[in-house]
Amino acid sequence: MLRALCLSVTMVFSAGIAGAQALSDLAPRTQTMLQSIGVSESLDIMRDAGRRDAAGLEEQLFPDRSNTGWSAFVDRLYAPGTLESVFVADFPEDRLTRENTAAIVAFFDSALGRRIIDGELTAWRAMLDPDVEEAAYEIYDQHRADGDPRLDLLEEFTSVNGFIDYNVMGSLNSNYAFLSGLSEGGAYPRPVPESELLAQVWQQEPTLREDTVRWLYSFQLMAYSGLSDDDLSAYIAFCETSAGQLYNQVLFQGYDAVFTAMSGRLGQAAAMFMTGEAL
Image 1 (spheres, helix red, strand yellow):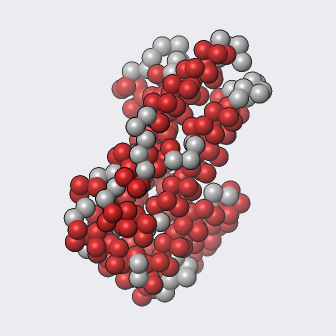
Image 2 (cartoon, rainbow, N blue to C red):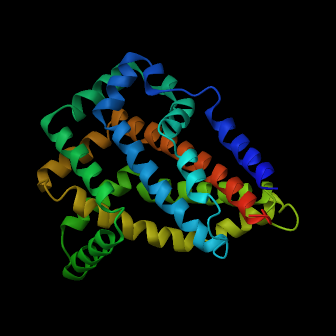
């Protein structure tokens, strides 16, 4: 039984490894753009976040089974290069014109652009720590209570980029992929119809939206704390350009593909552990 389980989970992982791609497979100008916006570092943060969240599933889904080998499978699922391969496979490179790519690189290679990317990556990684995340929430709550006009700029920035809808939809996609993986992996007595899964996922939308709003503004207050209002206004102005809008769209598409694919694989693997009676 254990050997069959290992073989099954290995097949889940192997399906994602076959035909693996890397950022170096993209066109040189695309590589330059992705380097300027710190995609490699972003994928590393996503990998650490995924491993953390996956590790927590053991206690939630099969807490009475010690020494299941779950942590080893999580390490394999999030092996270096896996997220990069998924990102590259679904990255809409064909949407990037030379003009837009050049404009994106020019902005983020500027002194302001580098400060923006450094601040975003630093805040994102820091908020993987629950204590830091909670402190960031408290700071945001205080800014709201004080009526800080900085939040007006951040609301404009968020609206221009559609961040709330993008993030909520990404969360819904990931949750649906995870539940689908559980169903396909045999975690339920019977396969769950797609309509039921969708209904279950959409029930979470109001809570996800509320959580997204709080996380986004808490993150932004931390990420852009070193920027003046003029700096932030310049960032907003870039985001309003065709290049800025395209940058936002293709990046979210690439990241959403990673979150969704990894959530589906995680659901399938978790289902196999949940039904592995000999473990």
